[in-house]
Length: 119
Image 1 (cartoon, rainbow, N blue to C red):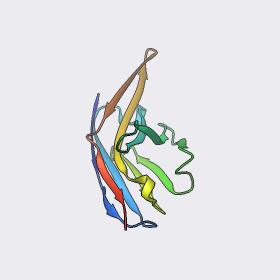
Image 2: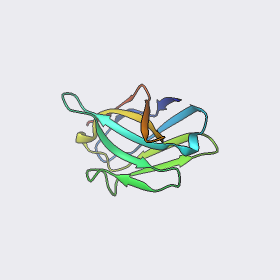
Image 3: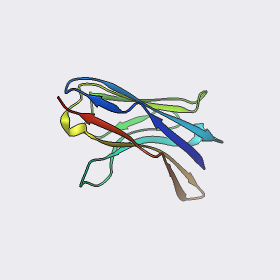
Image 4: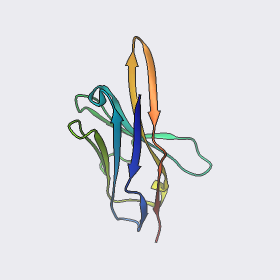
């Protein structure tokens, strides 16, 4: 189990940038697949991006080319650089840690950080 704390959300104008960070405490951080999810009002939580323990990344089509996920296993952190932000990126962003142990998946979540894109 890991404890996750997000930071870096806020209000930004369309076309602007924000960088979200997630600090993890606990053991074996490097073994987790780390991810960012978001949930807009009235919508289901959706995947934004993931990064594997070896650094392989995946992105939702809606953010490809605009967002970059990265991790620093020496500091137990994962970040999401968000560029060219759009109003539809407005949501609460959640950090996720996922690990599979003996064929069972386990997930830990942060408390979320609000991102608002508006002029």
